[in-house]
Length: 305
Image (cartoon, rainbow, N blue to C red):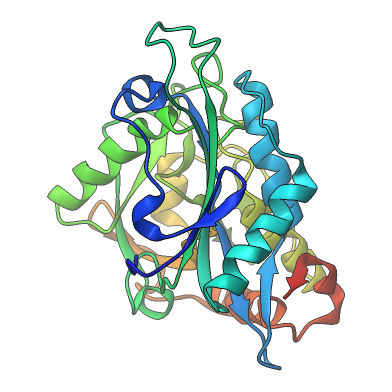
């Protein structure tokens, strides 16, 4: 992230170096906080357009509500703050990171009187899984770490501490020479990547784990399902096994950071033809038309600056 970037923090735009927190901030010790990942794209007419801004900010507030964190700002205020960050930094194509965390106060576990901090940062960021990942695909492994289940955490909230599970899986995958990890749930079904939802293609039909599974209900996932339906594809939400991954015609991941990324190999097994498949390519093309403002069917997903 460029050090010249200005950040919105607790109601005002501050210089990069001023956006700090104390070493005794509660969230630094115990991991209670919430965050979002949002992208802004430069559209074909040169404007900046944030993809599904309201939905992301609403999910941030909902995550905090689930975690009993009272956000001191409304959804509208946070939407305005996000726009202010992009305008201040003169950004069009960028990644946006809102963050809510508990600051100074008690160091007791409950933290019922700590200051609640909110920050929004933005910076230019390209392809999350590598510059050629969107075309050539990535190599994945099934992780030895189990995706934390619905009886153990709030799977529909983006809470900071819960991502230790993903961080360890990602580090393990990279140590073993892979780009990304795929995590199974406690029953052995495919859950998601460390920061992405998963789709497979079999006989022209899209399959993805159901919303009630141990997955984040990804906004990009839901967007891609709508785009797929609009493109005439059948989408089924069903449990997926490891074997299903290996014999799928195509596998791809999606998320705000990963966008739509094909998977060419899993656990040393070539997936399909070992390259981006036609269904993934078609969805990529359709998705990027949407975010560039070239598809009127989904124009309400874009917040223009």
